[in-house]
Length: 142
Image (cartoon, rainbow, N blue to C red; front, side, top):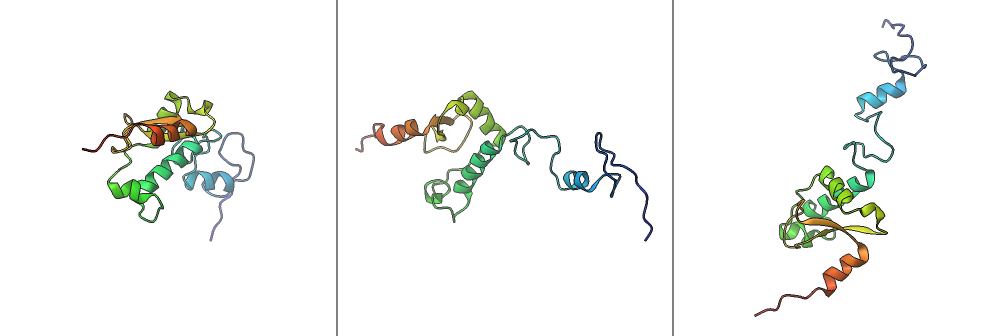
């Protein structure tokens, strides 16, 4: 098999020896594995501009709405609750509600019988979320 002398890596500022497609092994693996070389620190890999923390919250919402093996599925997906939020929607809610200033931010559905949507969700402090759930007046049964 004939080997080509490729020279240096074509990525600006990299002086390493090119191995494949005019790139060094590091840059080649980043480009062809789908990882974005230019994402900000703390951004998720699949959704640039969305923090890893937000993406993880979105994954947990998605799991409890779709995976019957998850402990709390019966209260979410089992009742027909669906996640209609994208990670970008969740990032918008995070910024709108200033969740980064909270000690323990949690996602809350305003109407617990409706789906996870942009209009029905907000970030609350953990203690406030518990207070809303357990100490709010319950509708009287007739």
